[in-house]
Amino acid sequence: VGFVAGQGGHGTTSDSGKQQPPPIKAQKHSGIPMALRGIMSSFPSTMRIPSLLKALKTVLHIWVDKMKYDQNCDSNGVERKTMPQFVYFFLVKKYGLEKLADMHVTQLQLAMIHHRKHKRIKLLGFMMGAYDTEAPPVLALRDTNFLWKILDYMRRQNEFTDALLQDKDMQIDMTKAKVQQCVKAIFEPILPDSAVNLLHRISLMPPPSESKNPKKIDFDDLFMELVQHWLDVNATWKQHLSVLFDMHCDNYSVVEEMKFVVGDVHPEADEEHGPGGGCDTVLLQLPKDANRKRATMRQARDLERAMGMPDPTKAPKKKKGKGGGGNAAA
Image 1 (spheres, rainbow, N blue to C red):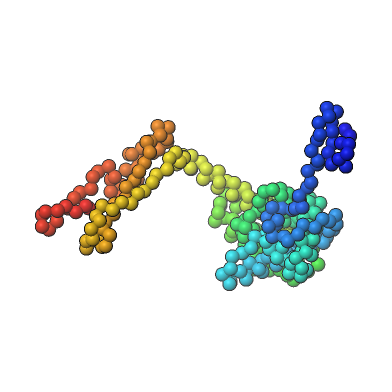
Image 2: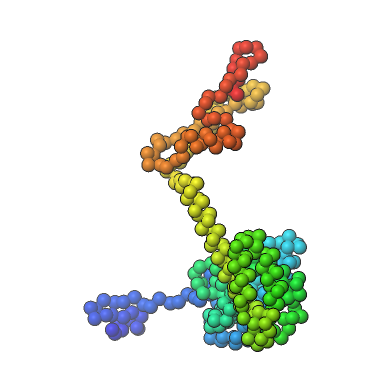
């Protein structure tokens, strides 16, 4: 393959003599999660990857500030931010300029990829959509709200507090008995059997590798286990609803449009309809499609009868007026 003569190397030719198109340039936001692209003001390029210790400290500060920010939002009646929105807000507030925040977002994305073997970094990547940049985050706002509920419960049990988190960037110890109490209070109302399974798994967790305290467990191991269990519970409920839908519901597709036409049938003014007269609504419908799937009339009548609705197959009864002359529609 050689350059095309006289064209400055903008195209290439193959052995057959056909000109090849120039290489496609990578987009500026390449590698940035989809949830962050609409927030960032620029997409700087950098090769600097934060260390694991700095990344762990940043993630911990983000989570603690997110819990406090959500409490302020709830007290003021303001909608909570998603994790990508809050991370950008956190970095802008910390560094003061959007361009500096954009640079640190890019570095944080590189750190989430490079240090993804650590469970805390991996969880933030799930919340940010760092590992599939063309898809929404694995953990959406509903998921993170549930996880912050667990952390808030632990804070009220004097676990995961600001005092205990001082100089605890690498490994954070949690009391196993309080964790089991938290799991029983939060997971048992959702699925009792699932809570029992989770309690058993927590009881078998090894002590932290640094303190070796048998009454403690590592926070990152615990949080990853809770997230995985929460995702399994969601998948179970979705499967359950899908089975119920297939058993009791019919799928319908739109095969034609219906048009409602309002026409004047009483042009003259009267006391009942006022100026302009009364109106009737006429339904114009195209011929029915023979392949359309629809419920039987018996099922429809049973449902309407159970709801106390009149039978649509029977004509409404007509009441005679006081004068005995005219009929009024029931």
